Image 1 (cartoon, rainbow, N blue to C red):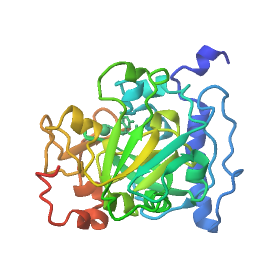
Image 2 (cartoon, rainbow, N blue to C red; image 1 turned 135 degrees about the vertical axis):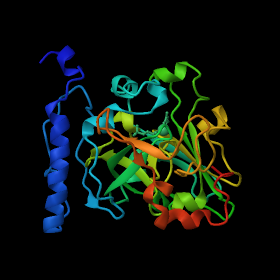
Image 3 (tube, rainbow, N blue to C red; image 1 turned 120 degrees about the horizontal axis):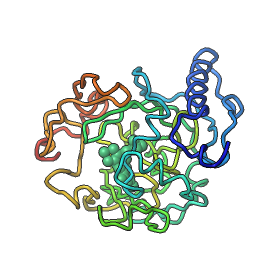
Image 4 (tube, rainbow, N blue to C red; image 1 turned 30 degrees about the vertical axis):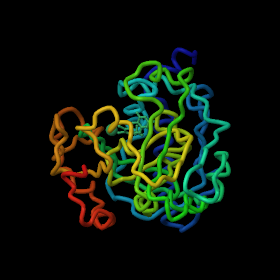
Length: 319
Ligand SMILES: Nc1nc2c(c(=O)[nH]1)N[C@H]1C(S)=C(S)[C@@H](COP(=O)(O)O)O[C@H]1N2
Ligand SMILES: [Mo]
């Protein structure tokens, strides 16, 4: 196979293989109750694309939905990652050469253990869990994604936040040489995001390092990104290089660029329309062009777990 063919958009055998292996492995785990060893799902990967995508050792985590996961193809070719372009296929096309090792995360602010932490220091003390979550973009499309990660709160506790740590602010890498989208001011770079400390410590909130039992493809936010399934996808900041504990509520990139359209909370709320479109329904990616839209659930279906975080808040005002 020549280089041109390898980088074409055709579905490659490994894209299928990685799903099949994952599904087989989950079934295997359920049946045997065993933890997967690194070798179980090994497949031969082509050298050039996704050279960094490797099998991860994981255990089944809690909170997974029974909905059918989207395909590897859907999840890795239909993305929002404006650092690599604003088109849905741009991140897949433009992020393949993105260098994610070595990777350092700077931890600062209201905590007793600030410092620069290597990717390995961040990840290695944690058990990686498979968690299948609903994923909904404010643009009214949705997917179901088998993430691999660990609770963000378990990581944050290691930095010993103090009693003034009311919020946590995250920042994406700023590197216009590698991230062609950052050469245009479509957003105020670098991308930033913020959570309340209670949202950050919630057991549903994941620091994600993989998909389908493999390391995270660059276009999905390698090597580290957030996922909070009850929030619009934009809260899931990708390629994180900074974590800061703050006293005051941080703004996020979308709020900075369009404060009327995007708020701090961004809880999935079918009753609060985006100013330019309805939030009541969503289009499941992979369902085909003519598939009916499905109703959007309050907190994306995670109300039982998270509604108490917002007790007393007017969710129309705090959108
Ligand atoms: N750094 C960064 N993080 C980001 C974005 C982005 O443009 N840059 N887009 C957000 C939006 S709008 C969505 S819907 C999700 C998409 O995640 P996915 O591509 O893995 O589905 O990433 C979020 N995180
Ligand atoms: Mo989004």
